Length: 288
View 1 (cartoon, rainbow, N blue to C red):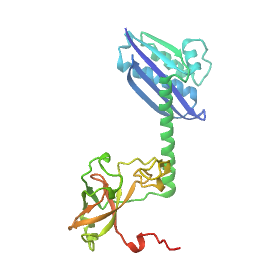
View 2: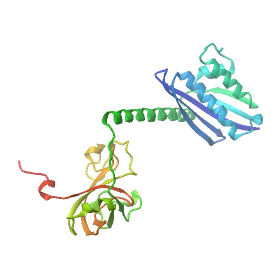
View 3: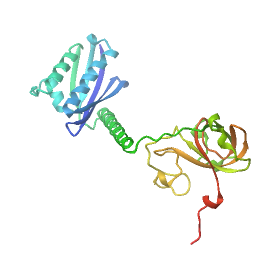
């Protein structure tokens, strides 16, 4: 007889409100499936039953139902009590879900329902899946609102970095900490913009750190002050718009390539712009 263990949880923010359902399916200590679904606006009880239905349907992938015993754990006392018959099903809203769950369970040799507290570690994992999905949904909605309010901004790369650093862990925290050379390949349609740049010129390279996280607003910076700091007060690559600004020295310039010293960008990083360094305007005025 095959035995599977199922943990389910549902969450609703507002009850009714934006809801999610999650489940884990295990055979012994092996997690066979970890799943979450966003449900739209639903009640918490609907989310709990939806999680149960999802798990009962998914479990068939991992066993022969006719010879399998499922043990279902949930922190919903109402749902568990209704499924084992301790509580009568009086809700017209939940009745269709209850009937569907009974039908879904009937294909298995046996289904055992157990109520457990929310503190159960596996239930906690399901709860995290639900809340993470709802957090992601809320963030996407907020981002859409921001985009609608601000409008899209189009920014096209003018070139790409060819760097000796293939991964972030290989690159220095700041460009000034390396003497290695990088080459910036300028796309042909922008090559005329290189006129006037020469060997030895200091220039700012603006890159788009496309592999950096964009949802982090506070970090502990490297060196100097070792305390939690807002990213706008640091040079951390993680930020809402991961644009880097690095002062480098030009080693050579050809028609479509610039070789520079002191660039921390990793290989194949998009380049957004190149700007000259002017001591007269780029050094802070310290006069009183």
